[in-house]
Length: 400
Length: 215
Ligand SMILES: Nc1ncnc2c1ncn2[C@@H]1O[C@H](COP(=O)(O)OP(=O)(O)OP(=O)(O)O)[C@@H](O)[C@H]1O
Ligand SMILES: [Mg+2]
Image (cartoon, rainbow over all chains, first blue to last red):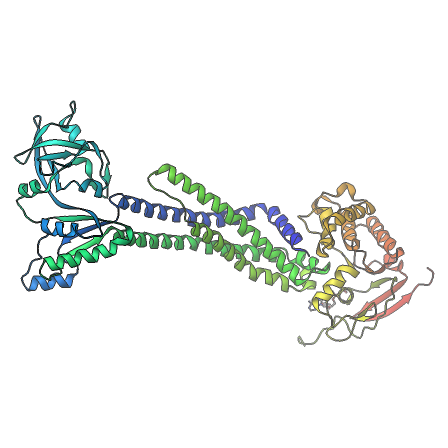
């Protein structure tokens, strides 16, 4: 019996047992579709987080005071030491490192903003002009501490604040009061909405010196650094730690977080999550495989007389085995392909429903889903096929 | 007593020349089907030998025996044994598929067989839509499509009324006239008497072996 004939004959059989075949194919298809769609969802979530996190800067490093390791801070606490503050001088030292493209010292606090008979509390960032490009913020209008005005009492308003305070007039050039000091509005941020839980539409930015005076502090909250290139991130981190250790009399009392490291942590976690979800979905494929086995076993029993007849007219045991095997292969193959299409269609619906979630199934998942479906289907058919091939022809023929 | 061995066949020594027309008769359980199954390579004797075309078959592998069944032997059964989901034409085509005959040849050979057995009008009907006689004609067409040298028929008229049974027997005898060896198991004395050689069995043994020289 030729391969083509085997495939054709078994396909005919699959088609003639229409209801049975449809149910099996559906079970297979749902399993594969679950793998494809759930991994698309996991992958979408992963890309969403990564996009969000990437949008806050490029090759970003953040210096914060204190050691992240518990042992260090514990020892510090025991010895009665508090970590040294980060200062503007530290920031300037870091700025001189060759790997650093630009840096921005940062103070954050809250203060009352008043102008045009309005008053509200706002989040205040104190920094330098570099903050805007480092944090990937955009100015809709004006500038912030442009060349020649580095020490001026200028303020940049978030888009929403500007709209609230100056709904009918140009915000730029207006005078506002922030915690008792007068500032000139020099720029308005472009509306960006929330990213990573931080809404830049409702902040104001003032020069670092004014912020430190406002909050009555000499220490910095953070130093933001942009490295020259991606490959410079790790050397920059080491250089910063070394610089700060020297500046802090040999104490390792600062922490440097790289955007890259945080990103790859997120990436790993979400990738593992996607894998786990795919694994759970794959269980439904195993169930579908068991269903295939059951259906094929029933088929062997139902068609015992037919198997005897085939043997009587000259089919070899191998022919019989191949026929049943091919039948299961068709069921699995059609089920897997249908499931793949269903999964892709489902992912498309997900993307349409949640445009910000890039729910594309990763290639490996579609491949693995279809592959596992085929393999379980094939494995599940081996036993029934062997059982059919082993039947005694005379006994099989006598069965009605 | 329950363990007493039952011999489906015992001490059988039989030679059937090529082209002969043999009927096997005997009471139920006398071993007729068992003998036919051994001749048709569906069953193996626990002891003894069997030669077909002068070759000792008993020791052949299953694959070789399957090939002999495909090419040299045609089976006709009392209960037709047609595959219910296949049409008449598809049932007749099965042995050709098993032998790997190319599609183009299959088509014309099946059409010829359908014509020869007056089944052309029923070619695309399933067995359930055919009469008993038509079903057995499909089965005979299937048994002869490979032009076997031996036709083995186990009570081919057992499920048919007298007249239809006679028509079916005539078809089989026609094949014999064409040179095919024909071995028919039957309960019907009248039908059995039409064979040139009549074998009577009882308790697994051949009791009578009578040749009719009139033909
Ligand atoms: N699978 C089997 N296992 C054990 N004994 C069997 C088996 N098949 C048949 N027999 C026995 O072998 C003997 C011959 O059976 P066989 O089927 O050849 O009889 P038969 O002459 O064809 O009868 P019938 O006219 O009823 O078809 C019987 O005694 C039967 O019980
Ligand atoms: Mg019998």
